Length: 172
Image 1 (tube, rainbow, N blue to C red):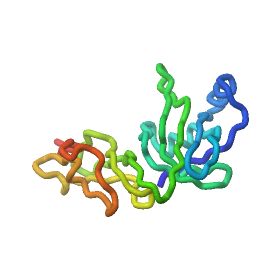
Image 2: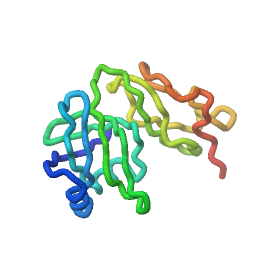
Image 3: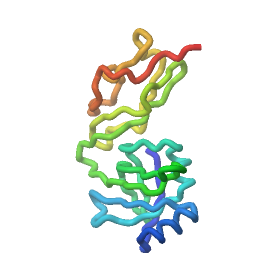
Image 4: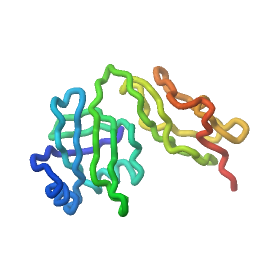
């Protein structure tokens, strides 16, 4: 599971958020199970982008380390600047280990596979949900792979339309 490190932040407001962003930190909030009241947090932009890549998947499960405490969270929202596309705010939802969740699981293309979608919406208990799903050419029937044919771990169910084409054979 991808790990993100955050610190609590006491200073709030738009001018404080601008100062944080200029120093390479993204303001955010974490709320939900085990957190109590919503907590204002700060995440290092470079570390976040290194851990998740430029295209963080909203709905992805992550491990958030907040002042030494570890929380399993769902990336609930990523706000971006309308012109520069920089990340300007992050929302994390702390989740219960026993509650079934609907999350986006990133797809990883194996050799000879071209993805048409970057993630698949699935449902399950956090301990059963995969970090990613690798698709290899052996799964392609007739040159394409539909969501309903993607192999999922036991206890995880598909939330997408099963007829959605998620990958095709890569040409060349």
